[in-house]
Image (cartoon, rainbow over all chains, first blue to last red; front, top):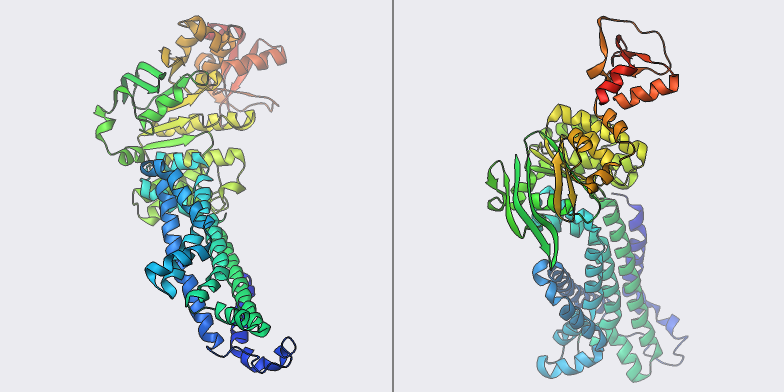
Length: 245
Length: 315
């Protein structure tokens, strides 16, 4: 395995962890944006805890979303599921058209406050990019390759796992990358209904008019998105090398 | 032996293959020839069940193929197509080894088979095996496609215009290789092409197809000498069918053989006994001579051939 592609994501992750740990001791820096304010650093929860909780929300929603969207994408490209293709695409589009805030507002009365409605909103919002890329990846495979795979005597499952998924994998990964990056930003709004995320300092800052809080939350969210994005970049490259595509 | 009995395939209202009967004997090369849309590829793809037939029967060694498991059926039928369909994410070796892998051969047996086939197809077992399909030239890719079709040692070989997309020289080379390999392996082969010259060169018997029907099914010589219809006559080309006839036979068949082979004089252009009469005639015209010495592959002078012998041989 080549190490070089992993240097950038590791650097971003290191910076993110360092800031999450060191922000509280950097209070003097923030007196510059909030002169005369004594509450310069968000202290209700540690940044470290909020970061973990934020990552956890995104991880769970991305896992569920990927499983659902990739399975749906595979299903509607099989002969048995082809009829469902328009329906499934529509559902995914609706998932992305409805703003996550609206999903939260609708879900809270049913599911209560906290992480569950946030997860639901994140899953729904993240489906479309993954589904779209799964369909594009599977559809972009040269049909003669599939025909010859079948002609060689592969079963449908062998064609899927030996040929289609390795060839479409990189495009599907790109879809998951888009979805996760969007949801890292979107997860912050979960803070409005009681989920613990890096959105907490942002919301608190907006409510109290404390720009320092807003900055601290925003910086960590931005760094998390960058770190994750470059991690996916490295994974995609590794995939490309493993399958030489 | 492959038998097609009253086989029909419809796509909606259109009839692609119309009630054809065709018997392909074990070990022979049957070439389906015709213009595009005549149903030749459809016929081929029904034999390995990539397409279901609408009606009729297809028997392989007396067994209806619909009674067999489609995957097991295909594992015993090598399949090569024009666009090669090589798996772009696998090396040449892994591409060729796909059917042995599906048949769960031990790794060592598979690897030996892969090198054997690379050598047979004129590729380098060391350097070419680790390449990826996008690193190959068109001719090389097609060789790999043919090697892949042969890898599982199938009884039957199905080839759908395998050399159709190649330049003339590469195609000619691969046709020669095909003939050589076929002499060694004697696979029952169904070969689809739109190129009548390719058909004449490779076929034991040719089935000429038009609009889903088989117009004539016979040896290349019989097709040239007694075309069944104006369509066949057009396909083979009236103008040079005499030359095509000369192309079917080799110099070795008609020459006067020396009692003892002798060492050759060094000549720039020599006629070999495996060359066709057509090439012999061409050399005669070029050198403006009525008689040519004939040499074996080993370079010994084995006989002579005269213009009269050539013309009688073609007649």
